[in-house]
Length: 304
Image (cartoon, rainbow, N blue to C red; front, side, top):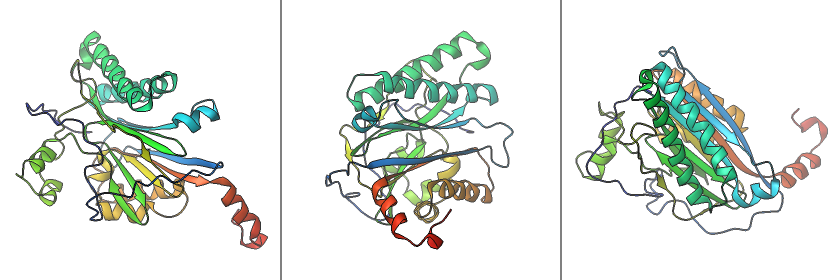
């Protein structure tokens, strides 16, 4: 991630579910539907150095707890971290975030939103501590987006401009709000969303893990109800910078998540591959329904 870090005096506060693609002013429906007892999650992680950079400073992770009961209660963890601060520093910062955050969350006994916040704070402390210990790492940091998702609910937290999207009912919704200079300008009415997408300072983030001794993560204050068929995409700016929301939707809404995630990164590279590109794409599925469908098909129609 080639990015300048700039801190603003104005506070962003903690925003949840603020920005939406697809023109839905109130966002995706939030009605609670009971999860089938066979509900599960399938996920794919993809990361690519791109066509310009020599080193990949991104990390993409999907982590399940050891206990299935714990998975049903608190969920699995998906994470994308985008390092900055030079080849060595950026890679180290994103690796620390990708290790500390899932481990902290799975070990925590706090409710999920609190556990996610504390996990991001723990990663911030460790990255900052490492940078203070080794002068060659001074200034390193990482943007990061984290999703904890169970068969019934999801919780999210983030720092910087790595994003979370929800694909539901053939629509795509941006579920996080960038901590960036251009987003602050949009909020103040100084730029339109369209102008921000091509602004020369669109890579200037206002928060990052480890760049300062303290950080204020944004966290969903309440669990978000999920349902079978939902797809969540976590990605670095190497994905969402060159691709529009409509293009991302077209690439990830159909097919196996492994194939869809691969298509997404290939498309980012086709646009120049100017940055590392990383994604975690996951889908809530009903394994019993899938099994029943496959068993009802003639064997010649069942894909290998």
